[in-house]
Length: 376
Ligand code: SF4
Image 1: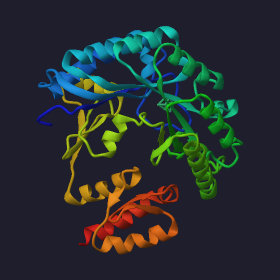
Image 2: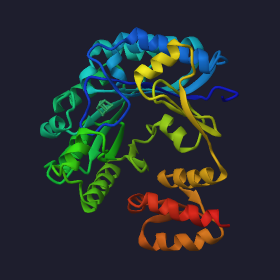
Image 3: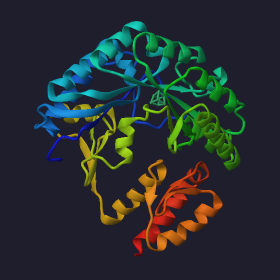
């Protein structure tokens, strides 16, 4: 357990209205969300796992899921009120709520804003009705724009929008149209994720039955590079492989992960890191609840970082972000080929960052540099 409470906190809220066809997250599908039961269990988790948090300063608080907005206006307010009894949100804390468009209304926005939420991460995924239906999303395309308007009118201006690209071959989706629609909404931040088809999902089963063909590398690359060009031309910083922010609107919470800072994780399946050890909670909501009901620590497993883990992680975290990485010794010769191929650029004599072409090869380049670094 960390000696001092981390200044970054992730809270996993597992509830969803239904399961999207691509999703393998730990969720609990509920028509009626058991807000009081969840908030009471989370309070118990804080008491059991972090008895010494009194007034711990928190710089970023992130409610992820699942669909945290399913807690509603009142539910989010009561969750934050409970957390505030144990933690102190600093004056300029970033408080992000993952939100589905259909949960946004003027009342909810007012309650969230008054409780301290100042950033929404809005799950849009696409503006194409057929694609939304195919993904089994719980909203239509018009709801995305409406949610942005209502949030802004209610005083939450910092809005991040999620989109999924690289859809399977048979799915006729215009990526250029979706990027243009996202730009029209003037969000302050965009997160773009290439679709991965996990085996234990409806899409995974369609794939196993041969009803769905994963996208080609060419399509993945061309959509990724198109988004990079269109969004940077519109003034966004492509500051991490999957993330674009207008200046001053980079995600502070996620940036803490990418810099290796400690963070606490609460709720079912939440992960945390104290600077040396990673821990993660039991995954299923019912399991997590049972542990806390019995006053048992819900941590399922932990892993101490070895020197090798740390080295690999430093390389990977540096390369995935615009921060880049310092190279020395034999690494300098190794990255020459990257520079020549246009996969990286030098930001100073001994420092480099990956280009969008390099980010398309992130895993391979990170593994390559890790190997060189581990040998000297
Ligand atoms: S809303 Fe998000 S967490 Fe819930 S099922 Fe869909 S993708 Fe998964």
